Image (cartoon, rainbow, N blue to C red; front, side):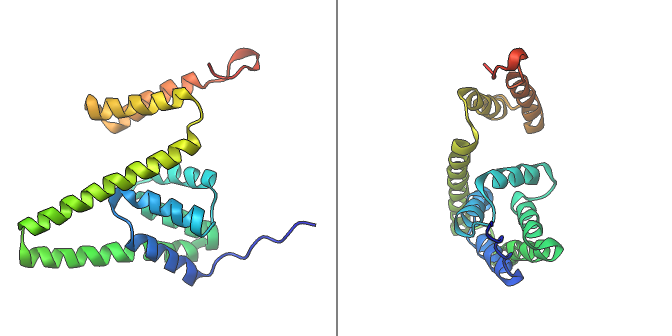
Length: 188
């Protein structure tokens, strides 16, 4: 006899969890918070599911965090779960942006405001790098995968190739590299 599946979290718990993640994340670093919140703390999804949902989120228009909130909320409690997750994720940012617009309108483009924005940008870059290392260690299995990541980064950052073109080009190369070989052998 197998154990019964755990009951899905309440709508209030989903809202609160996404509200905390939305309020404590910075820019691109939100993926790190999402992984920590959804995989590690809440255990609502495992790493494999997280990466799959992240891939879907990145292919959809809009912000990755918003898309992830909708996908995970829907997975947990259907449409109502998707709506409360979306509201929880977006409410802190919307409130802060409204406040920032007011402060900017009053204070203008002064040195303290610029310094704060530079600090936020540095934090977002650090968090993005952190989650890249975490997810890369779990999803990149062979040396060739790391080469494809480096090729993509070099194409975009070093040679100014547009991101969609780099992803399609390197993606096609990676598919070719990992293609099934005759005789049941693995990729080189």
